[in-house]
Amino acid sequence: MEMINAIGRRKSAIARVYLTEGSGKITINKRDLTEYFPSAMLQYVVKQPLALLEVEGKYDIKANLDGGGYTGQSQALRLAIARALIKINEEDKKSLKDHGFLTRDSRVVERKKPGQPKARRRFQFSKR
Image (cartoon, rainbow, N blue to C red; front, side, top):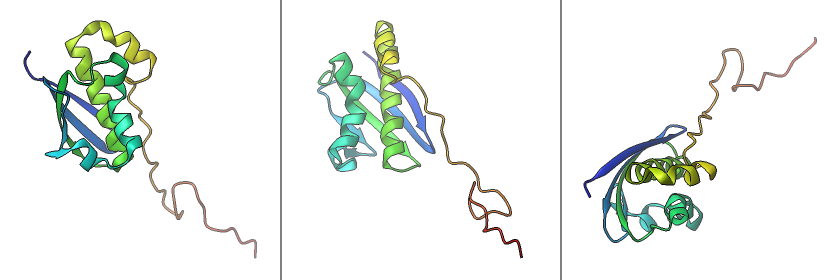
C-alpha cells in the first residue's frame, strides 16, 4: 500500500494527513499524539474514525497541523483521517458519513462590525 494523503479543516485549523500501513502510530508535527494532545477527550476525538472501522492498529498516521486552537485542530484531524480511510476502502463511506465524520463543520468566528465593540454586542444606548 502506498502513502495516502488527505486534508481536513475546522475553524482556522488545517490538518494534512499521510496514512501508511503500519502499527498504529500517530505522529503530529513530529510529536506523539499523547504529547501533542494531552487531553484524553481530544485523543478520543482524533481516534473516532479509526475506532468506528476497527482499524486502530493497522495504519501509521503522520499529520501536519497548522492554525487554530486545540479543539479545532483535533476536529480537523478527525475529518482528514476519515477522508483518508475512504480513499483506502470506499465501502466505509456510509458508516463514517452516518456518524458525521465526513461533514466539514463550516462554522467560523463572525467578524467584528464597525461602530460596535464586538460582532453583535453594541455600545450601551443613552437616551439623554
